[in-house]
Image (tube, rainbow, N blue to C red; front, side, top):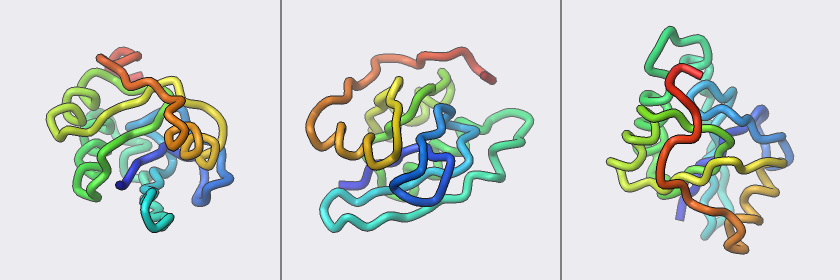
Length: 119
């Protein structure tokens, strides 16, 4: 299964970026074959609005079924939810820490956004 993790860098040892829509990178990790796809999110970092929705579409297009992040706004959350992607907010540490926490069942999935729009 593919999971998406917001990141400040391009590898598993990078710190997580707490922002979803405006994260520097989004790493797509395949939990079956341990592959990592790095998505440069720079187009959305400085977007006037709609960054979360665009990032959600990108994550969905890459086949991720789970998003691990710090904060996810309401529009992005609705888009992810409509795509059937589970969201775990308030995840911290490195990307590797997040993957391990997910594999060990130590993340809680959100029922709603945990930040207001345009955060």
